[in-house]
Every structure is written in C-alpha cells, then in structure tokens.
Length: 120
Image 1 (cartoon, one colour):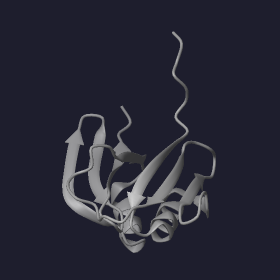
Image 2: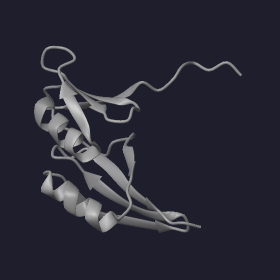
Image 3: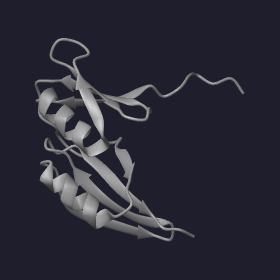
Image 4: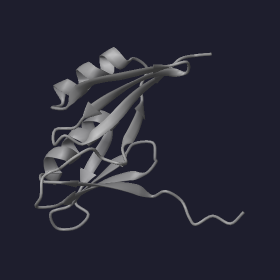
C-alpha cells in the first residue's frame, strides 16, 4: 500500500516558544534552534520527529485533542523531572494491563502523557 509520507514533526502552538522549547529539549534530550523568526524547533538526539513551537497570541483553551506520549522507565522519576522543568502532573492516572499512563502538562498547560510499559 502506498503511504502518504512519514511523520516529520509535531507543532505546538504557544505563547512563549523559547520557554517551551527549553522545557521539551531538557525533557527529551534535544537541542533548540530557530526555525523561523520567533519560532523554535527541538531536534531530539537519536532521531525521530522534531517538535516545532509556533508563537500564537491566544492562550490555550480547553483540552487538546492531540497529545504526545513519552515512554519512561519510571513514572515517579519522570513526574519529578517534569516538575523540576516547570511542568506539572494533572493528577490524572490510568492503569492498564500493559502499563501506567499519567497525564502531565508543560509550562503552558499543554497536556502530554508519560507512559511506563510493564514487561509482560
């Protein structure tokens, strides 16, 4: 089957692209560059899609319909790291047979999940 293409990146609308780029670069082990004037890009070490932080004038409103899932070895340690970087745990946790999922928020309130997969 012919594909449309490959996933190259994810763009996050935000008020302060530099602040969020620094958060995501520290959280994922990446580096920050400017992609367009005022925009920031996070390239993750080891490859994968890039994150682009796009400046927008309006604040986030409501729940995001798309979010990132970040696989971690230890959700407790990951929560501590996210909080040290300026993010927060929303208090929402889901436990499934395959692992635990905690809903987090970056410094501007954009939701993402940390996921600890259990060995089966």
